[in-house]
Image (cartoon, rainbow, N blue to C red; front, side, top):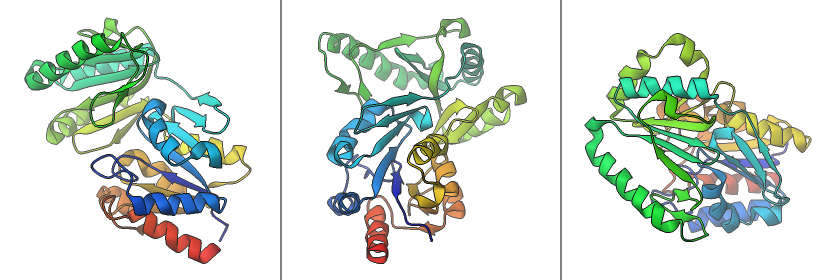
Length: 296
């Protein structure tokens, strides 16, 4: 077997506990792996600003690690600070997706370079109240200069625009990533009705039972990870990958060793080489410790 040179970890539901922190045992195992020359890739649906605190905690800058943000839309070399951006979703496709979400009464959140487009249907009135509160809070935070935490580790820049939209024409910039959410059954039924031509242009990934991430076709974590591996002169056979949701499927399937967390979606478990313990039970650390015993 080719030596493992890189370890890729999803964040939410994988590296992070439900409290959004890294277990001490997991942290120690990953630090030991880095000290022995294995480099880390933190690959998340989150943007790089939201990945950065964990990258700093794990000292990716010292050990030559990488951040893969927004499901592969961008890559950051933590040591050099270099950034690579992959394809965005064009305005027309983004607008068509919003029209679909509005027609089916789905909440819509699109991230673009300068901020966010937000739509909350009347049927989700409590969420509408929360969004209004967050927008008011964001106005106050614009007086400051540092990124700040919103909810569940979600980070916002005070310079970001947060635009409530009501019609497709309100989307005027290419989108990095689009999220839709509602009760699981409602999302499933809606997606079944999506126009085939539109669906063909998209990479639709269930992150949780109630949240779906949508990217341009051909963009996912595995695409970005392949760019990193090629740059470093190795292939997927040198990668150990951990994940729990549909947006991890590409890297789990392509990695030399693909590991599903104990709490992973069933589809991920079925496509993984191994299943470890959950994110709450040091699932990553147990595998990494066994790996280090075998190769060193």
